Image 1 (cartoon, helix red, strand yellow):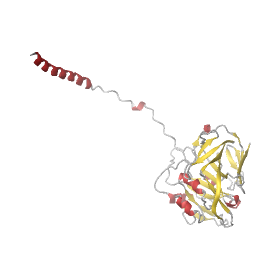
Image 2 (image 1 turned 90 degrees about the vertical axis):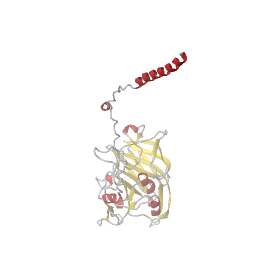
Image 3 (image 1 turned 30 degrees about the vertical axis):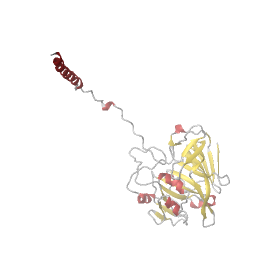
Image 4 (image 1 turned 135 degrees about the horizontal axis):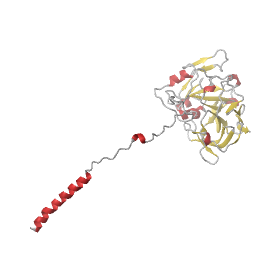
Amino acid sequence: MRLSTLRTAVPATLVALSLVLAGCGGDDTKKPEADKSSVAPVPEEPATWPLTGLEAKEGQSVELDHPVVVTKIDNSTASSPQIGLSKADLVVEELVEGGITRLAAFYYSQLPANIGPVRSMRASDIGIVSPVNGVIATSGAANETIPRINKAKIKFFQEGGPGFYRDNSRRAPYNLFTDLKKVAKAAEDGKAERPADYLPWGTEADFTNGQPAGTIQADFGSHTTSWQFQGGKYVNSNSNAAQGDRFQPDTVLVIRVKITDAGYRDPAGNFVPESHFVGKGKAQLFHNGQVVEGTWAKDKLASAVTLAAADGTPLKVPAGKVWIELVPVDANNGSVTFGK
């Protein structure tokens, strides 16, 4: 009888215990939900323009249905006056034949209807344009250059295309102009996207430990571009742009590049140089009347350039308009001097 009683008692005890546990686990007391209204919203990163690093105005979109349009502009006295340069976001100056220079003017936030004189592109432009997947507005190119531009998958628009026209009041070849609104329209693909940042953008606080540099002379061989720091901007004292239409940068960035033979001659028989905006070398960042010495690096032609100070720490460019000087590293073909 005891054994039988024990066998019936044990299940009863388990049943009673399970009921107690079920009661404990079945507490339907709800915990109060967090008051979502009391949680501070995470502030959105301000929208910035890719070619200047500047914040867009309220309501402006930096994602546009057209790519960056890089226009090749003549930079000789014969091209004077250059038109539309002040509307550019960024300018790159590169060496061409005869020791003179040509400008690669970048347009994205503004598209002037009258820009020029438009001249031909070079193989040098591949490393200049491809980091932002830009298109080129050009008068054309040498037969040796076009296959290389096509291989780099850079789209270009030339005379005979949308927006191009001749100004009969000027003499050829310095009379080709274009309407960038029409060029950009032809380059639309139905996708509003923001291009990548062209430079490592920063703030005024990032620019430190500079030495006085109120004047700059960037010598390309037969042409020297001279700058003076005035009123918070750099003024090109020998600019070919129309008065009131000059590009006045907040920063001048000097990149020393290797130069090689592009493999052909111009119609006058001059050696055609190719600037290699890839690899690494010395750099000088001029801002606010001062200069910081450093280095630049670019793994591939399509890569964005990175900058470092002399101690190896990252060097950032204060947001604003920038003029980049691609000066030959060879002392026989290029040099950079500055003064107080």
